Length: 410
Image (cartoon, rainbow, N blue to C red; front, side, top):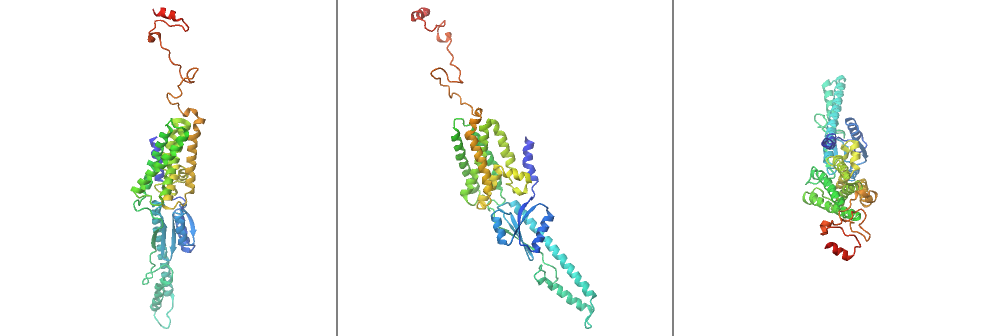
């Protein structure tokens, strides 16, 4: 069990790498096509490219969570649009990728300039002197023309030596993460304790046998909302990790807790206490490490990403990130997943005891009141006192005359 738990957490973390990561490319120029080719050849299958006509469109796509970032290539510069709020890990990846692309472009420009300079030398060496001037004069004129060619709108040069200037990299953080949580540690580390507490809530409510099913369901809803308020007060009020749209973020936290607790309580209602273990293992040992909350779902193996986003911890983490930073953009699917788990769990709480009566154990002493014709069904008949206990030496038959009973007592 311990080995499986460690494997569930360690394996996804050890396989973090971009897989079909949505990234935008601005423009359709030759430089932009060069960026696409460089990324595709450097890391096949790592990026899912989306083309945008201008930088403004790419910025909008980042804010709407269509892409994690974008590359905008201009003459002599490369702009990296990123979002640390979407994922600090992906933002660092895009920074490193932009630096490599700029270095590659600078090296290619330097090779092209060297080739042009070599061709110019060869042509000047084979050229004949004109009007009696020495060959070195024509070579000097050719060298001057080559040195000035860096000013014609192509890759920039230093003007004196004709060497192209290195491509400049500029980074723009479109949606910035909270300054109080620059690495997203508060956000990611809150998911596991929230999952465990949701399971504890379900266990307490499901084992409260004196509560009627409707009351249990309402209790789960109310307690989930109260617990979500407590999480928000700590994460934002004290630590400042969820800075925007407090009402929507609180609702997202409440829906996440409800989806986990209602599912667990429903399993306990259906199959008894034996349903607690599998449900807790699914949420804690699968839902949490497969959620991608510490990096991004697109950095996990494909199967892990798909499973994680269909479980409440993964869907909840993505939903809270969307409400806290992106005005709820791209959150419809996550809301649907959490609502589905919540509805199924609450339905099991409400109607599961009718399908599986043994899941609801009788309360001791409940229903033991005897009716007019004897004890209630399923209860033992009251024990009659023995002769020694009631002080008599012999049993007295029913209907014996009072004088006979008196004589017997004498």
